Length: 105
Image (cartoon, rainbow, N blue to C red; front, side, top):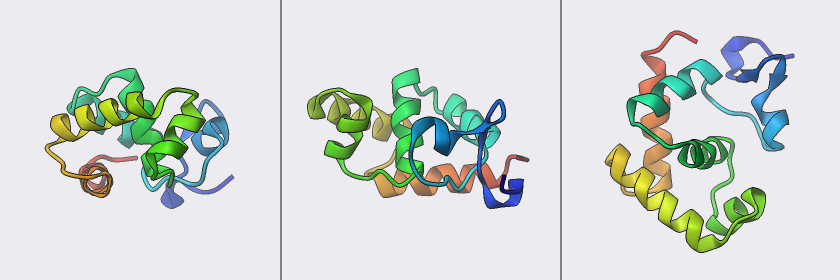
């Protein structure tokens, strides 16, 4: 298992990237949830943010992995952008990483 410096968040003892089936994340699980709570993201929005941080960047890929419609993902992304005062998925990623740096892993 990778060290905490690498940023592999864990759910219990299973890394989140394994439980979600996607690539490595750049923030710890603790940091992720602290930032998500700060912005008051819903559980579904947290799931989308997790995928974004894991490298899933297209709406279609998000919808496929979440087994939902692309329109649902689009609506949730817009809500995330509004809550985080972001204009794009890249800006959401930037905000998560910057905010996470202030939180101990």
